[in-house]
Length: 247
Image 1 (cartoon, helix red, strand yellow):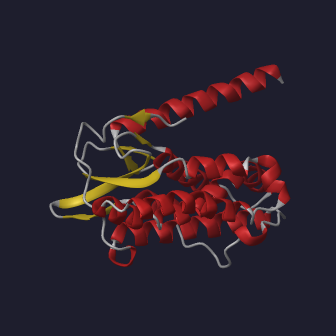
Image 2 (spheres, one colour):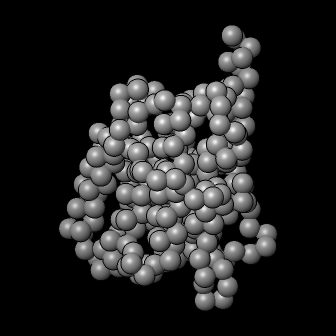
Image 3 (spheres, rainbow, N blue to C red):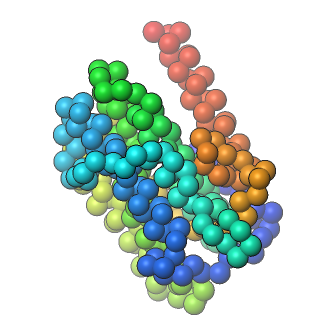
């Protein structure tokens, strides 16, 4: 759905393994931003009188969740700010970009909620638009925790550890799926979500945050990912128009 490249951004070598989650700034920012998004989605669905069971995180979301999400992949580099591209790889040569694109869709859902006042329209939109980003935010929180172990295992040539991660990924995602109430699992395919997040190993590639870096809703992205998202948005809009014509 979100494309594949056979080399990471113009043939750049694979980056060194990242430091531990505890002292890796992008992990902390991504985890906090996703937590904020889940709180925002939880309150919106609860205000729409929907029970989301174990997917709910208590407490109010901080202000401007969308800004936190847009900034969560930006971190200080040696020569200035850099940003991460989030990808999935099966062979550490070709990459797909579901995680980066899903982060954009989580951000887009947060923006929609933040732009609407409490009321029937916001509730209707929350029920129709938020379940998938809510599931993705939970699964992404699990996914980012395996970036460091994957980097370590790859750097050390530890095939046993990589095999264990390959088994852990789908198990972690289905653990989230089991928390979903029936009304959400009837609206979206939990198995499809889990499969998308666990089709390969998690990977990140850092790039300088130059002034010409593409952004959509302020989320930095490579030219390739920007085209994927733009094409997806155009396709989604055309599908919506066709459905209205048929109605």
